[in-house]
Length: 208
Image (cartoon, rainbow, N blue to C red; front, side, top):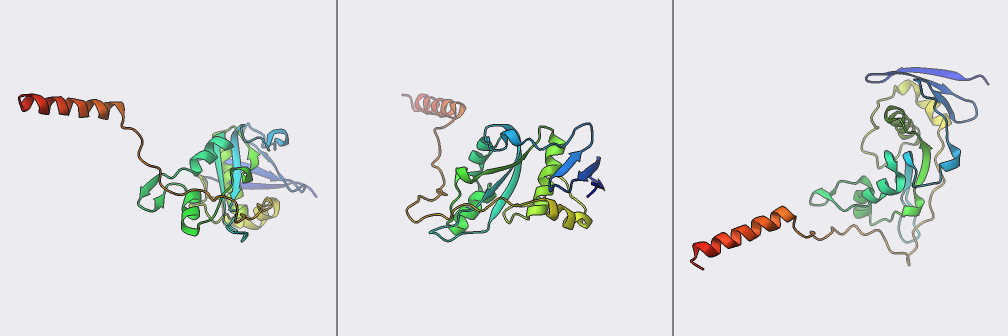
């Protein structure tokens, strides 16, 4: 089957994507070839990745919740941020993964993180992430990535994107991901200095 060429307009850059019949997007042409680097796809410590993380459920009951993301840093570094308990408001986590874990009491394993593809270029990596989000339709993503792809190519994108196998369900004896908010750390040096100055001023004012 000959290669099929997709032309679509992003917000500021015109891209051309060649879809290969082998089931992998062929190449992204804008001085950079979209070439799947198989040799390091399982290495979570390489930089410039598009990754996939699926929920393990709870108590031997699987869950179909999943997430697709990208990072210029390594997948292991980015994943540790997804496990952060930082909140923007009480009960509202910055991380969509932690939000699901807290709301459903479900578990995510660091070992279940999968590398979908690698790309060092910021624009190209954003395009790939949007393609995987459109093709895999992850339930935990809060947006479609940096690029809004035309809907007319949905059927073609879904044909060439394959979802990784699901993780093993969480076992009752397995500890779950902790969603408890971390206690506050030690005060900053500037805060500590200001507190000491306030104490000294109060002491002098009282004639001590």
